Length: 132
Image (tube, rainbow, N blue to C red; front, side, top):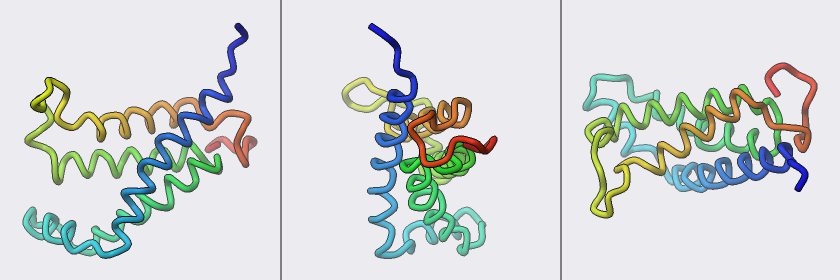
């Protein structure tokens, strides 16, 4: 069977992007919970609005394949920030089924890192820029 790396990258972009976009759409109701976590940790609450970049804008760009590497970097930053802010105590924990306690966030993080290094592939809106 012939390899089709570009189709694989498209599926990865769609999967990671759509699944995170759903989280971002839920945040359109407000970010007060994130603001509370930020203030509890002594950080400025306006940083909560960065969630719209990392959970709506970046996944949308990844889905369509426009500046995929740049969008993936922003996406990975958001995942790392979420781990540090909300899930730090779970990094070395297992859930009740024996899986990693933050496996979904881990898949988002590592999926975006893969896309940062590979780019979006030929099945993207834009393929000629170094950030694609």
